[in-house]
Length: 191
Image (cartoon, rainbow, N blue to C red; front, side, top):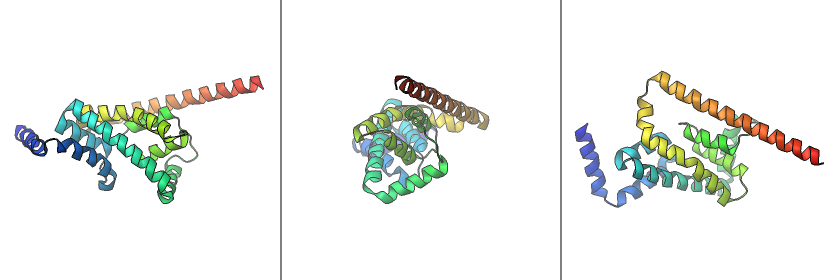
């Protein structure tokens, strides 16, 4: 293991200041290479350490969010494909911004699909990027710090972790429905 770490350090040192740039580029190429977000963030933690790895992952994921926005708005076929995927995975289901942020933490949930949800909930690119970047902080930090540990957990700990995230997702959804019902009730009282 020490030899592996030594080899990685030499590899990164060989690229110098270009290494962080290559890592951010890896985040942008990740969908084309069919690499999960978790894996790329874990690689960032191994190669650059926690702080720099999390920061670089956050930058890479934020740029990927911007690319998603551009793809959906410039290429109607891409938006159409993402809408079809949305209808297959979450047919007739509205989710809140908070739920999107929780889903971002879950590994293997389609990145561009969640971006599409955010685009539909926001009014402008600036608002979309604000919520998108806010929702990328936790995945970048968690995956960089604990990504490798999560993949080494026994299956029952991993299942518990996903059930816990699913529970949080459901609670946020119910809170959103209660807030929406309250707002509708207030509007009806005023009318």
